[in-house]
Amino acid sequence: MRIRLASLIVTACLLGIAPLHAQRDIPPGSLNKPDRLEWFRDQGFGLFIHWSVDSQTGVVISHSLPGADAAYTRRFFEDLPKTFNPRKFEPNDWAALAKLAGIKYAVLTTKHHSGFAMWDTKTTDFGIMSTPYKRDLTKGILDTFRAQGIAAGVYFSPDDFWWLWKHNIDIQRGIPSVQPRNNPGLMDLDLAQVRELMSNYGKIDIVFFDGEPEQLRDLAWKLQPNTVVTRGAIQTPELYVPGLPLEGAWEANFTMGTAWQYQPQNEVYKTGGQVIDILVETRAKGGNLLLNIGPKPDGELPIEQEERLREVALWMQVNQECIYGVRPWVVTNEQNIWFTKAKNEDTVYAIVKQEPRWVRGQWRDFVLKSVQASPDSVVTVLGQNGRVLEYRPEVNPAPSLRQESDGLHLRAMFTHRLQDNSKWPNPIVLKITHAKPAFTPPKLLTKGSKFDAASKTATLNGTLQDMGKAASLEVGFEYRSIVGLDASDRSIPWQKGPATTLNAPGDFSLKLPNLNADGVYEYRAYVKHPLLSIYGADNRLPMK
Image (cartoon, rainbow, N blue to C red; front, side):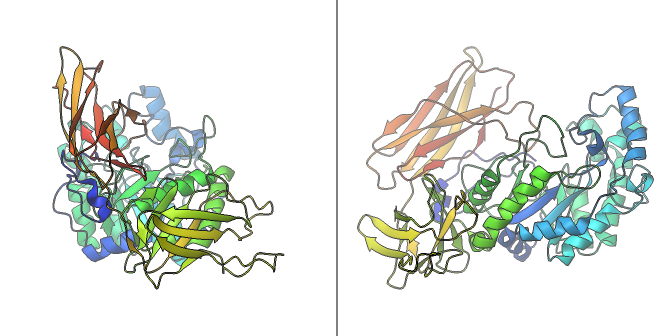
């Protein structure tokens, strides 16, 4: 899915106002139940599992087939199943680790684009039952995760390269001629497979359709009305967190490294701290994080992935209260302090990144501009009782707060001994009860644009609607090329254009030269406030 936001969006959604936007390639008529979407939003943290027959060679999952020659394609479909035997697969170990890490739901690639079925299906011979393993991996995973209290989810690709190969159709993706809607036999196969998954595997809480979903999602809802369809019915940005909170339920999908499936070489993993930071930012913006693992072909998890999940597990053991059942605060962050708010309470969580490092046993002082205390407000540090600093009985580590004209002053000590060296590097969370907003963010619009083919120059337009009580503000645009990216992938970073300072609300623009007339570009307006940067909608630049 592509998230094509409308030209007009009020980033005052940071105040809780719903942004006005269109959802890219999401068909209308969603049957996701509102109460189930609320349930989904409360979960906050899911585990994606990319695993298929081609994990044996450490290749990109499925995508090595488009453009491949006949010999490679034949070896993929005929030879790889003969050697796929995950004899070290222990789903109980996976589920126990996921539970420790605070995972609330898991989504398995039951069928990726190659068409390889990870369940006992009657619809195709290209699947797990035609391998030496000959056991239903999907059942094993879903059952053991449910036993840990983790909701069961399935990923399903309507694209099926095995079906295209069998019918002598060039393997492609994303073009009309290969879509199920234009191939009745493929649609029949997909419908039969979705029926099996939704009928034979108990309660399926979540379904992720990675392709054209219409008939398939309708069947999923018919068979299990309480299922939540994510991709295909809500926004699911891939490999990036949007610049502003999105409306309603949404889900960011991230790899631990650079690859979705197990890749033994040319892989660089995010640190555990970076994974935690992504989780925090996603929750601060109202979304769920679906964090991916790619098991080895023998069924074990790569040690790098296990290590990162265990680092996340420690952080979640201490701080999960700021992740579950929360919604965005009036602002997402004040510099390196990020916020979530308890959904049905006036409790705010200030998630403090350790920049600089917060030394254990040391006091830190903060002034929050967006949070106002009441006479009943209390501040605590998650995971700490506020009474004990180990081996230092003379120290009273109780945190304190006081409301002043320049903001809410907090004083807290990090006392929790989480590692032997006392150098725990990840965020510390302050919990503030009975709080209310004390800040009005600026309001910003990303407006239209125009491309002049003769000069290869685009003109981008925006409007600063409200200064948010600031005397002056820096505004500008960010842009990036998205040519060649998969539908929801936004892994290419934004580039920042020249900034302009405004002393009053008004319009602003940027001329962007030297663009490729055949390119595909996105842009967004931004305003830099002393507390945080606020972004407008991501718009597509019209090149025609």
